[in-house]
Length: 277
Image 1 (cartoon, rainbow, N blue to C red):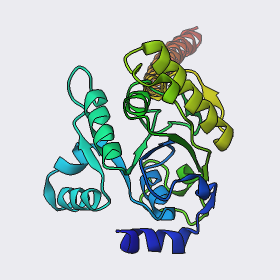
Image 2: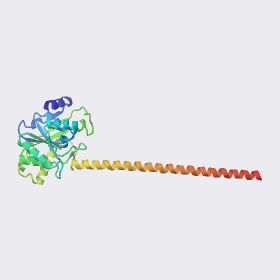
Image 3: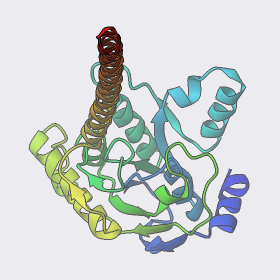
Image 4: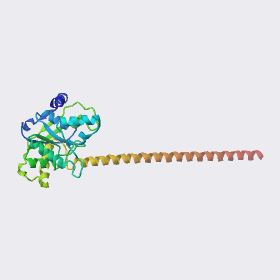
């Protein structure tokens, strides 16, 4: 996959990289990245000599049909781990378990602290579960990563990617060994996550929004729904107003016609009266 996917990606898109020396040549580490595009999980591994294992939603591995099988084969080929996001706690526990297993094998574990792609290119609040708990349970260093402009290459809903150079900035490893054994303290988890997100913000230059990306997506969806409903209501009101105006004009035309007929009858009567006289 490094040759068949990574090679063409680097050849076609020519991604630029800063801080490559911050990724250790061997040994475990956690790569914590912002998440702008579906392609993030391909560009980052493509520029590294080592394998990076990300977690991916189980739907990528279970979709039926030829396209589904090809997608599953591709994700397995690039070393993605399927995580079932159903249930009360979603992907949390499964992601933590998968991450710890990857670290214990001495490999690189990639994770997106935001939990989902940014809906508008801004950086959102990191979720304190997976990243911090894996880091504190294993003692592995956390390396902040910033993906640059990947959302412009293939925005959601676009099939054909735009040819342009994305960027990758890799920060210095963060050591959280001082919190070892405190992976169940929610205040410590929050502090670790916020420190990582702050470093990602500095690397990416993104505007930071102190809410979860999932909440932002929900707000955007609700706003879009409200706007659609308002437009529908406005269209219906306009149609009703036009209908009422047309009826009003029709009634007025009928009234004018009746008045014209009355005037015509009166005129004929007056003419006949003059003739009689």
